Image 1: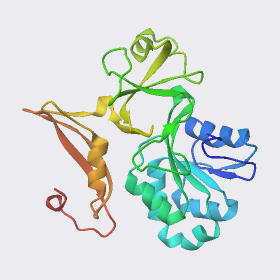
Image 2 (image 1 turned 90 degrees about the vertical axis):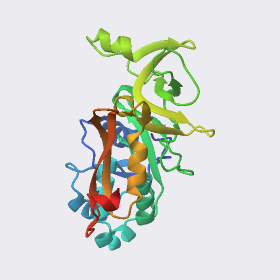
Image 3 (image 1 turned 180 degrees about the vertical axis):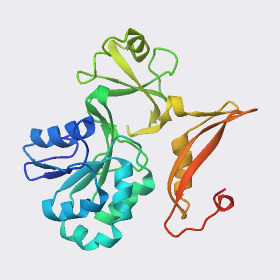
Image 4 (image 1 turned 30 degrees about the vertical axis):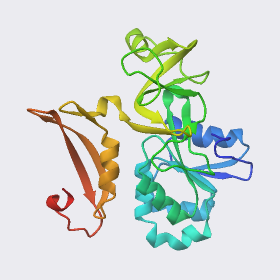
Length: 277
């Protein structure tokens, strides 16, 4: 993380993540200490207090999850003076997929690059990160920690194209204690290395940027057609009357599963279900 974010002793992080969560513990606290930088830990996340914290602490960066970023954006318009007076060098997002629309809104609002990263507890957090000099909305960036590859979802072999994201490296957990069944499902040997299955589906583009298409358990099977909930989320978020959305599978008597979505309308919107359809 310190390398990915080019942290120096001149940086100061505002940490709003809980310290029992590896995102806050590693990406915010440990990364700052490793860089000899400063860190201020808030007593939990509170969107109403955040702008006061920006004003008092004057951080150069903060890291949070997408729902937190959206809550911050909802209150940004009435706090323009604070944002201008306490400029950020960068913003980091991790722990869940950041919608491209939210990434763009953060950059426009704060005038700082947004580095979406990809991590998990089993990898001691960070696995991929968007470089500060070139972010790709909708991508979790390039490998930035363990080695990251794509594997066949059912067979123990590495492949090209779309499949299950797997990782290997000294920062990857050696296994789950007292759970041999989970270990047998989660690890396999290939190309002389031991690989851990993340449970995420994705693919690399020709520049080495990883794009996740969803959790394998959450992929919707509509009459044999596999549909990524994240892609449907992205389409719906382009609708001007939609502020937040989550897409999921609903049982269907003939198709097996049907695509469903729950949305939160933008403030003041009068859109109906028919309008959104």
